[in-house]
Length: 283
Image (cartoon, rainbow, N blue to C red):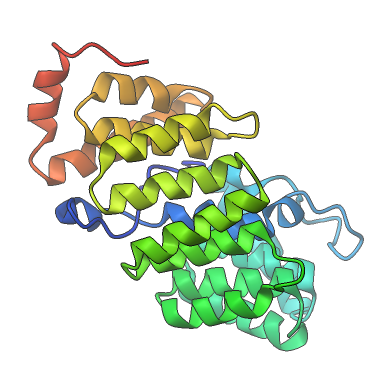
């Protein structure tokens, strides 16, 4: 998968679809833990960020833009490793370019300087999960949560980690807590749908994904997950149509190529492509 894809088809650990899982990353965290701080990290205009650093949203950058962002933000981080905003943004871009171990090291440094900051703890939990430290991530996320003023994004983040640990019932309970606090939030609904993908219940997953994609706040990441679920059920033409909406040609082509490679790992691409010729797309 190339870094030019905004947030491509990603899952974590499929149960009924285990061979496919080996080709995948983690959309659950992309849609939950990052949600705790994305709006602040990706649109920062604070004076604590040097003017030479772009504050444009990272999710929409292609590979070369991400590489330049990593270079410039990294240089600022070296000069001021205790700056919260720079550290959060640097860890985020590192995670987006697959440098999870380095992202974790950055967040460890930021967390030392800001041990009680909820945004920092949230991002630290994301970095731990990205580096495979799932139990530690749960502990960090729980530290960030405050029972008297709970954050729906942290509930969703906790659910994402629990799903990766195979604790699907607990994960879904956390997503529903998030939805009780933030009804119809598309990222949480998408995560709940992905939870059912992990257990092989694609019909239920698609129901949640469709609902999520129809919400006013849904973005391309949610719709790309819907495309994945549709493709996994053999309706590839429909999945490709969903994948190509709202994205640049380059990003859409990368997503479609990625989905094809995932399906072919199960020796199913040829079968699905053939059967799809006679399948009517479901809207």
